[in-house]
Image (cartoon, rainbow over all chains, first blue to last red; front, top):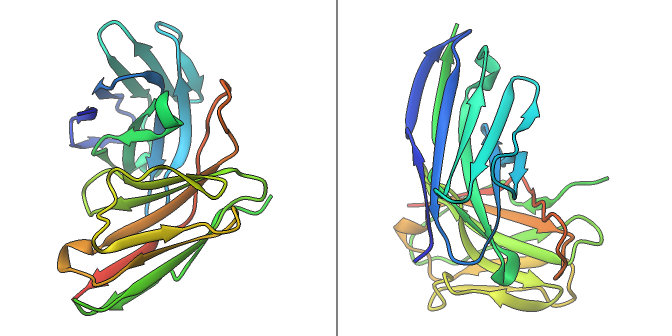
Length: 111
Length: 117
């Protein structure tokens, strides 16, 4: 059965800290890996990764994929209280082009 | 560009009652997904449509859940009868990709929060 595992499940840091969120997967017919940020509403898209070793960056957020070891990390530097959210990792499968989501990492950034 | 619309936003029902949710995807998006997100968990795919055909409904509890997308545009998801464990947020998402190799970004609606008492 396809699965996506995220760690830690919960994390509390102070503003200015750097955090690393982990996502590992066992999915047949891998197509891409996506990171989403979910506050109180629907998930919003952060990154899509398809190739190993190529870092994607957006401001203080960056992400990289290792297709050999089947994992991805999401880094957030100089965290702010607005980064508090659940960060979801999802793997897209080739068949049907649908997605398997991980349980999410709940990040709380304290002032 | 208008986003994915869902209604209602909140629904409270008693167990054994029936409930229906509605979703209108982004105009022109061929693929529509319904997800169930239980508190503290990631979204779980219930059903995926491409136009008006079902691509994947392997995780849909078919004894009580049904979904349709008759004209290939908007969709309804029904639960009948509801159980306590159906309490969750039901998310609808759409994407424009249909069998291509391009990037498949899903756009999510605001969700319907269902509480079954």
